[in-house]
Length: 107
Image (cartoon, one colour):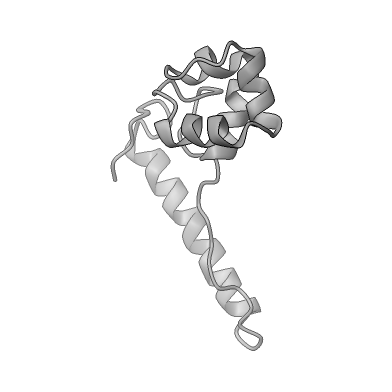
């Protein structure tokens, strides 16, 4: 298992506890859903890139700024305009205090 945030999985005991919990969840779902078979997937983590941080400090994708510039409308466009309409940079530079929420939405 690869984890960039060593604070989260810093020892084998934590990893084993996570595995045990997820395995128990899988067994429970299999037992309860064996007839109807309605569960098709389980998502382990739904907040990509923001463990121990409220935002991603990588550059905002060019595709996003190009799309906003081309459309000229929308809530993200409005936040981008209020923050100075920078064409490139990290999320906080392009979206100010809204950066964390916008980055999560884009992800």
